[in-house]
Length: 110
Image (tube, rainbow, N blue to C red; front, side, top):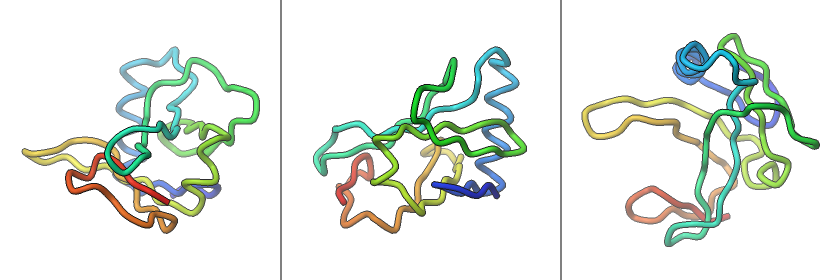
């Protein structure tokens, strides 16, 4: 739905909108990569109180999504989706740069 480093599905945009309504003072959501898990890297999404120097900004109908500059090389061309069912709820990333994922799906490698 939004152009840039990542694109967001309609479900992801709707979830961003819902989250921003719960915390309207936030500037948006931040996406970054953390070294974690058995495959080495993990996607992280949280509220952003402000833009940080070097952030890429993805504007959506639901609100802004800030992408940490250190994450760009890992997620360039990815699609961010949102899933909710009885076993899982959260943002999912379809990343063409991934070379593998751990068995539980919590971490990835590029």
